[in-house]
Image 1 (cartoon, each protein chain N blue to C red):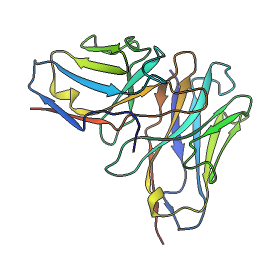
Image 2: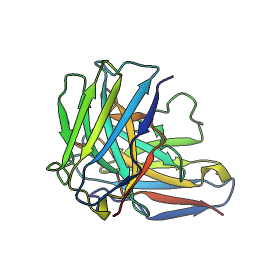
Image 3: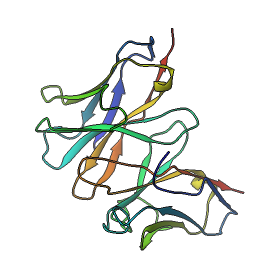
Image 4: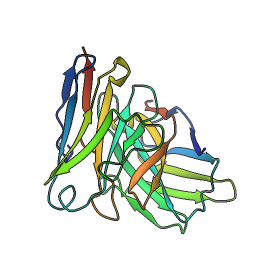
Length: 120
Length: 110
């Protein structure tokens, strides 16, 4: 059974870079069948897709965040990561990592989520 | 603001059935049979309930059913149970380079 677990600082200062890692177990991040995605949910709001990466290193980003987002892959550790630069209070949210099956175009496994607060 | 329209809230009594709609466009819901639905209990990981409009992943109750007509996809829950109270999000295929969620619907079991 595939499991995903987010990790990283729970508090980030304004203007700094938010960095999170998702560790995948029970499956290989090098599989050709999946994308690896980041999604977030600000308090009281809906889900917002941030971006994704494929095993080849190819990425796609939400246009509204594209200038500040980088998603990367570390196949040796079976992990993928999110960097979001120049954060503000509006980036305070629960951040989820997820696996996307691109044959069915759905997010079939999710991490539990991690709360990141942007505050000085 | 999502371009995919879901009702903000729906409610029903235990044992009843409810339907949550997800209205998109001819560029997403209307063209592709690739709509997924997610159940999200606060503080937990979202869970895939329906994919490819009407397919259920292993382990998902057959009380959950998906369908589509034109530019609108629907999730129907039969025989409502207290544990179904959650937020529900639709997510239709909207192109190879993006993922978009509906605004979400809060289901209250009365």
